[in-house]
Image (cartoon, rainbow, N blue to C red; front, side, top):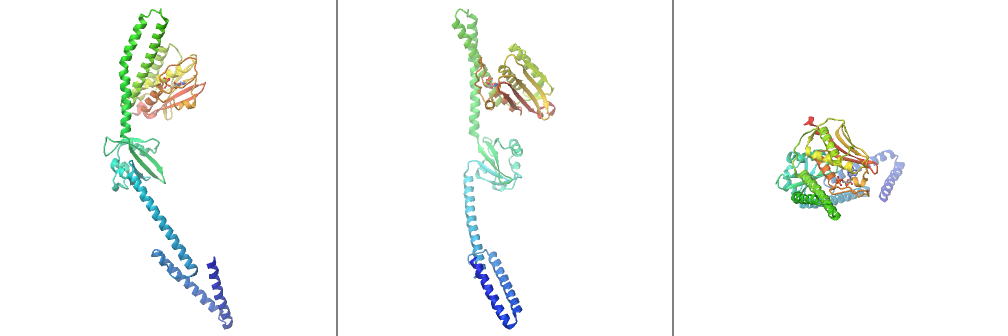
Length: 426
Ligand code: ADP
């Protein structure tokens, strides 16, 4: 502000001098014109100097000048200096970030909106086989695993995708994509070989133990039955003990069978054929009613659709759902089974008027061994594995299990199969 005041004061003094000289000489207007032209060319000269100074980099040694122009030179020089310092700091940070990401054991790849590689770290070269020269290439042309292609093009990045390393097929990778910035994505691939090996060992262990338990269990059951045959009922203690033993071995048998089925679902390769679902449902309902000796099932078949899948697995899933609906609802109520088609899915509804399930339990009942703790009049036996089996079977058939329930009113377990499972589509 001080500078401006000084500039204006100087101008006013010159103007006054011109006025006085003009008054005595009668040359006021020519003198005024001369002053205006002088000021105009002086400013043009300053602008020209300023532009030249900027062009050569706006260094510290700016032209010798005074007044407002000196201030302008000084401020522009300071702004440029600060920018330079900030740029230096930023490039140092970028350098450090690059060093960190280079040291990362996980492969990191930055992709743009067109799936082209923008940047890769060292691990990406080692496990994904991507080179620096691949910058600008579409990643889908370089990593050709169908699982990876489907994952990247799906735009659904909630769960990671598993695929073998293109450099060594003994290495298993879990990759996930994180969206950031405008159209940019970070692909992180982690070596999960050990984790997968441990998971395989766990599955094998459960399957082997369950398999090995089968024979001693059958022998024990045989002995218990023999003892029950020879029991003449004179000792109540003996009769009760034998009945308890039989109950417990039955329970163990169910557990072993369910564990074996789960192990099979996790490891077996899918073998699909066309399954007549209406016929399968009729059979399951008849068999269940025969075993239980009750007529409580109302079957409605609104579609004759056949599905492509594994009959043995679907039979097991549907039987579990029907068994549960009957088990967890009063004996004087009906269980409805409804097979129908909607616009985008084939649905099997298993509806009961039973005790219902709370929202917190709904989120957990498909976990292995999870059983809802309720105060019932009679204890209902079960393994806690039935719904885990249902969930696995449905996943293997690209289907979903939807559970709707209201405490005290009943539940609906819905299996939703995608239309591409219709036998006509295969
Ligand atoms: P379980 O062998 O115990 O029946 P499941 O995995 O089939 O094992 O079911 C887990 C739990 O979910 C059951 O213990 C039960 O509490 C609850 N549940 C399953 N189906 C129903 C149903 N139709 N109505 C109410 N509760 C159910």
